[in-house]
Amino acid sequence: MTEQQIIKKLLRNSERIEQQLAQIRLQLAAKESSPWMTVEEAAAYCGYSKSAFYNRYKNEIPHHQRDTRMMFHREDLDEWMERNKKTPAVTGANT
Image 1 (cartoon, helix red, strand yellow):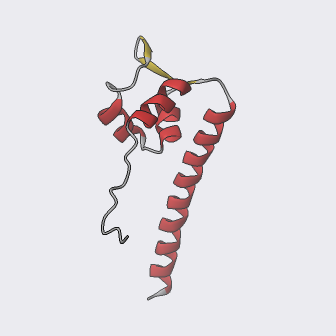
Image 2 (cartoon, one colour; image 1 turned 90 degrees about the vertical axis):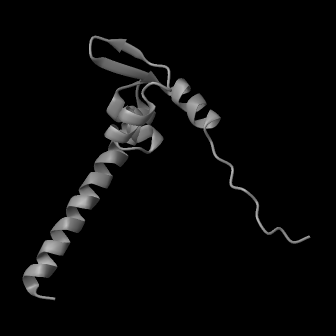
């Protein structure tokens, strides 16, 4: 691997780490502040990207909308996640 390839790889890794840190910051901010969250905060709180959360789940989770701004309440998100929790199937149990 050339020096230039190593540098490019390190830059890609640092960008990925920065994105992960930004998501962690959003999660922490959501936990410490108001129970009301924006789409970005709600997505981070639930562990999804904004686009995945908005496109897949916006109609499943209770929310308030004023003009174009959607707000989600932490309790509604917690209830939704609990309702949609998947329990792994037990396979090959030896007794």
